[in-house]
Length: 267
Image (tube, rainbow, N blue to C red; front, side, top):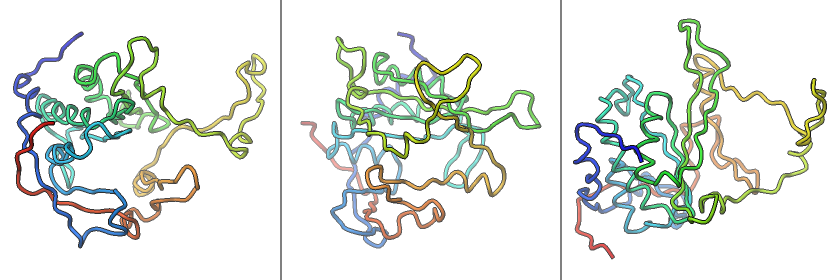
């Protein structure tokens, strides 16, 4: 399997083992709702937070979604998105290793990136998770055309998906075999119909025509990035999409701060 080399690789592949376990302290003034809800928000470096969660949740997480810095050569209020490429790789490697330890055997991890680092992530994550556990490389169109100031516009972003494990005799990973597909509702089925096409009726059955782009500018574009989280079983909007600044108000979540390091004996 191809291996990606960079200046500090030998140190970075061992970095996760050198991270100390940290204590977590609840911050009641920032928490909300029932204390036994199980929802957690940890304030601090995410590498330390992942190591702090490991003794409690190793091998128990079904699905992980991360949206790491795209390294777009930009500076944002809360983090620097303009770091040297080898530093980006050094940042990602130990976090991927800890995230893999948190996954259960039928779990999967979903990672959002754009063209800048996605192809390099594919190589190092194949090494961390295993090339045979790679599920899919999803490209989604984020706008309906290139900007006027570029001849070749960046109109796509990507989601890369890996599973925790795969049986050697199976064509699918354990995560794919355990994906919980919901039954289609009558309302959903009603959106599909027979359309007149040049080559006749699609042999695969009814389909629907939809616009998959997400284009916009200015305030309209900013607002379009917020989506309500809907309970798929009840249809209830769990977090509101119209007031993102109130996203946690009225819902159960416990906020924690990272404290000093402590020794932990691996079982």
